[in-house]
Image (tube, rainbow, N blue to C red; front, side, top):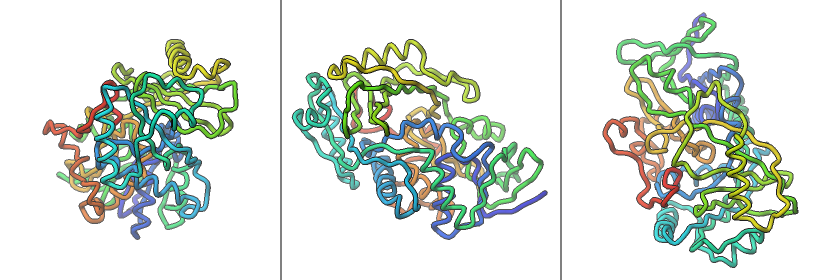
Length: 395
């Protein structure tokens, strides 16, 4: 069976769903999304869901701002709750990182981020359970918070489908169709072929295995990340997300009163098989959680581990995504999000749509050149000019 589409999107995670939504918003609805399982069934559902615009890379800060604006209007835009909770986001740094933080906040404001420096007393009111003595400065985003990547991806998909996009679940792409130096479509596991003028590969941790046979090397490592949820033992109220860049951890509230913990120390990561990895925290990570949370939050003496899970990041050498045209005509890549994908997904979708339709970004704050695949071969990595000691990868 042979089909046609203007655009085929390989992968129905949050980035593929966002691209389908953004294309449909621009009037391109002859789009087929091929998802091997179900929408958002891969790593999307493992996201910790933090919403922040705190990036030293200006284009990423701008993308996160676009994402925030969509999340704030989600009820109006999608007609459904996507799980966004605007608790605020606070980041705390030690003395060695004060200058970097202040420079980063200024650069963020230059691209539209509403952020400011606040003092210890402000944070003490928000997080009265925390020991704030090791911190030298704090940044604050009142519009930050957290969300639900699974619900957000579903909202993108429903909106795209309502505009005419076809979303085919249980449809594994086995091959790209290549004619000379151009990609002309895809072949599915059932033998069906879909011819298309553009193919968008949004397959996350599975990108390298899909594209490698065609000589397209997207330098992605698959890195396992662990998350622990904690019963705080007390009513914490509406606490904000807290990113601790002294002990390298982050915590955020969960709906229902629990606290989610993640480790920000990425100096020694664990590579994994995305189809066969331990889907819970190890005993060593639980011990790390107890140590870090107990040290930073002595006001929670009765806190207890509730549960844990794990997921995988698709990590590039500079910890920033590839969003752009591939080396084959008609091929577009949106992968390597390195843990940033949820918060910037609306902007990713719009950038993909811009590139497919116009060949360039419509937002001058988000130059497509920043995210080109060739930057790795050119040794021109996308790095923050304001790195944080110990936590530069995610900032």
